Length: 261
Ligand code: GLP
Image 1 (cartoon, rainbow, N blue to C red):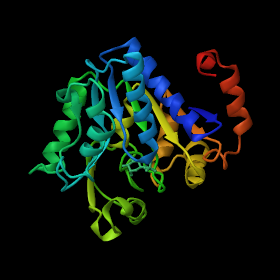
Image 2 (image 1 turned 90 degrees about the vertical axis):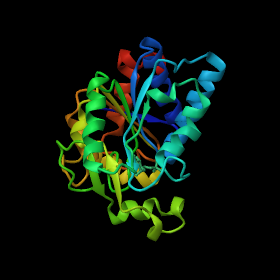
Image 3 (image 1 turned 180 degrees about the vertical axis):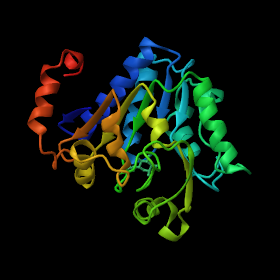
Image 4 (image 1 turned 135 degrees about the horizontal axis):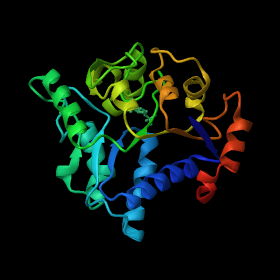
């Protein structure tokens, strides 16, 4: 795992967008794993800008989102499909047929989860997975006690997550109680993971994810098992790290990061 500390939330989002753009230019048929949440809005804004100003090409790119609420239709402004259309898919030259999210309205949800896993496998697996982190330490909607080898499935949302997402639904009472999410095991199989966290409200949980013991109570800790995981944070989200100086030293000295410094 590598932890990269950028001075502010804008430079953290820029680094993530630059990594995505670099991988997409190197492989136009990239299979990209996507995440939702406020943190990612800036990353998508930058990708849209790179598409418009530098011709960043999404025409062959295929995408798989981490999760979707159960019971929301794609036209519902609170659904993750709607979020993706609004922040990325509707603003770049991606072929919508190449964009995938779990169907939260599927009649048979278990079958839908199974089909989602099969589709990821048929696409050759996810090359680059973008991740945010919830306040409960979840990646996707892998709530506390999610098995570290779990696959795409229906998960009940925890009270912390319901509270965290209440604003988009008017009140906590309106937040769907369940979501379909890629499992921790599904996420660990992608070739490269990038987790982006900004703001001091994420400092505690990010420190646990990077430096704490691996536990199913905080599914992001499972990323310590991943052979190629990059955690990008701003100074605020880095506030509780024990070894920030070491992370800064790595970023300054690793040849891999030279073009991004
Ligand atoms: C939701 C999503 C997560 C995301 C999290 C953080 O719970 N399912 O994938 O990481 O929100 O959201 P934000 O970036 O708004 O803090």
